[in-house]
Image (tube, rainbow, N blue to C red; front, side, top):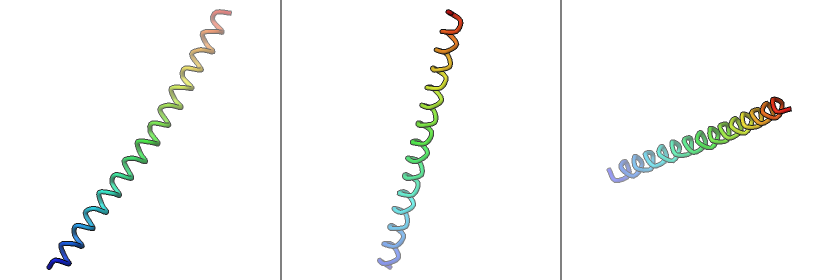
Length: 54
């Protein structure tokens, strides 16, 4: 009986760690993608503004 509960507890902990890792990876990937997108948009707006001024 105690062995079963320990195995279940370990399984639950492993599943939480897997979920936390997946969420951290997704957050990192999404944040990097949004940052690159914002940088490209700002660069494009700056270039279009300088073309209009010229």
